[in-house]
Length: 401
Ligand SMILES: *[C@@H]1O[C@H](CO)[C@@H](O)[C@H](O)[C@H]1NC(C)=O
Ligand SMILES: *[C@@H]1O[C@H](CO)[C@@H](O)[C@H](O)[C@H]1NC(C)=O
Image (cartoon, rainbow, N blue to C red; front, top):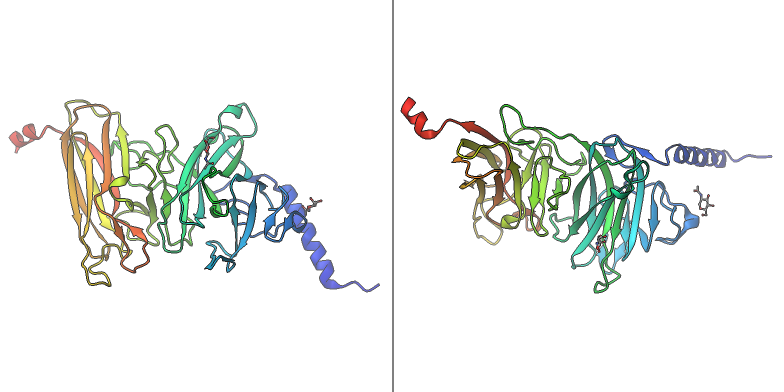
């Protein structure tokens, strides 16, 4: 009998893949991509009909339901050529579709999920993200967030989104649901790709700073090769924030978490780019201030060197410059930034007397900006290195001088 070497090798490879799949049906988590988080593993062809997923276990490591298609980069939809952020494949979620992966986590720790999403129609989309305990006593402790996939923040049409949760059990199902209601065109629906997860530490206030995570060094997973940063969408008051210590207050608009590998960041490895003008505020409530006492808020406001508000646009108009507004308790300040797209930052400062507790610290951008490359990519000033410290009463200080 002649044995074709290639088919032996292929059989061995299939066997190996099956073994790996069996051994790791539940992904154990380190920071980084979920198992088959980018949908590149070949699907089970007997559970596919062309690009349509027909069986719930067709996509390795995922369980799917509803109308789902495996999209390949370069595929056409209408007259639009689809691109895919992470290599060649992504999933299109029809109305009522959901995808699910079980991951093992450490109960009690906080995690942030990052994934890419793209709209396929001009209408707004919403995605529900749920973390549901599978094992243990936490059956009722599922956490769900509604993420608006609405504004396109980057010119590629793809944005990375983040969402965070607390692991309420050792085994948690991550479920993404697209449920658009009846008014929406069922041919629309978001495409998703590049799922990754990261353990979120919970930095506390220190002797030098009454704010938690004032330097934004802790935040959601940013795929190392991604030049776009990661959107942090608005969240409900009681939800876990992908930016520990901070809340994003908005109806539907996000802020962007950016890294120093791809953006000019005032200090350290990460900062927040305020890309949604006055519609989105970055907020922290400080419960340790004492009414009647004096405090100083300081922060950096800068230019991310990403071609935002650079000197002039192609049509000859000149940039309006950027402004960051900060509030601390009853006081406020505005910092003008005019680095002409070249990077650089300034310090803003507010000295104030706390009139209520908690003290709210709020940062927002006063303008709307797009990159000067005509791509329509939304951008804005970056903020970083925010600190709040107690100070002696200014009047008493003046007497001492
Ligand atoms: C592929 O799907 C078929 C039909 O559901 C199933 O019998 C088979 O075990 C699956 N193969 C793998 C490798 O999962
Ligand atoms: C998200 O979940 C809520 C509550 O279960 C539901 O009312 C809403 O329609 C869902 N939205 C989407 C986009 O699936």
